[in-house]
Image 1 (cartoon, rainbow over the protein chains, first blue to last red):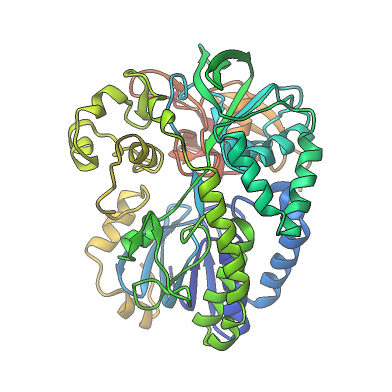
Image 2: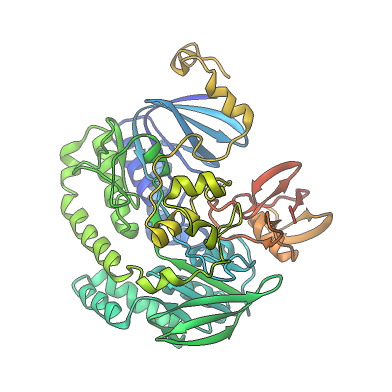
Length: 429
Length: 81
């Protein structure tokens, strides 16, 4: 199926929704694509979708006439102006004049012994599972890793009846205290922090603490943690473990967007180095929902032709970016975490490649060719950020398809005539 | 929408609230999702469609990500254990 848009937004989280709404308000014909079954991204999901901000933006989206394309996964750009996507295994050909990439972020996972056991999940991962119906009442969940998400997840799980024996944060108490002091200048953040403190009150929060090993046979039953140099073992039903977030830059890379320091480089108007391609939200810096909303709005307004209106939001974006850089500093990974894996620890879960096998290689490409690390279905999305941290390897390029697709659909673009011609004739595949 | 749905996981019916993902239903039924290359049991990791650890066969189609699909009554789910 072929579809034509003035502005196509990839990613249905806060940045994508804000971008789509603003572009549509400018009179553009807008489509918004998301891999998930519903819009809202990782943050506005389940009962969090009922938060007032989420309700407000979804309302605006519904009123705006934007075409939502959920359960649709973009996998290739055969040429500028056209993206190929898959929906229920069917090919979708999406034409656009302007493209706004709002592909969000994912959790960073660091391998340690036992991390492949069932019920060891991401912190956000377990939260998403609970939002999608996983019963958690009465379960013991150790929450570990780093980042503001840990407290939010612990609070959420507790509210849903889980027992949280401990939250292990690798950042030091000093670093968290500096973070808290800086937040004093931001009343909104203080309010959020106080609310969280109330919700996780009574839970033991260990700083300078991280998981050393998860234990269990068919699933995790306990975890050994390091806490200020000493180790302790805690019984648990789940280990929710994520090390802050990494931006999803596979699609921007595929399109040729310039990347700096792991983030998509954008100018004041959220334009990437590729003409007609904008980027907003987490791929430009991990700043959370506020920075996503303001960047999305700027991108949407500029793509819709209202650049002057977009300029009025620059001040708000500046404040949001200061918060992003504060997050970066506070939750920077400590060097000791490079020693997390044992030689036998699997780093690549898709192909079961151990740390010892990877250690012999000089770079990502060599490791891929020799060990199949990063060559499985996740395409290095999980092990890539880990090897980047452990070995300072950088993925050199992204090749289509950026997600596994059906062979028929893969073949559809290889020998496909110019899709524009097909579109004009109104034909189907 | 009905309050409860019944899907079939590895041949056995599982009753879950509607709005439950296939990944959550598999966990409720007490199964892992797949067996790794080296023979380890694996379950969901990321919960957001990126890691592919929860891939299963749904209604005969292999490699569906169970965390991205809502369960439906009569859905036939086969884990790749």
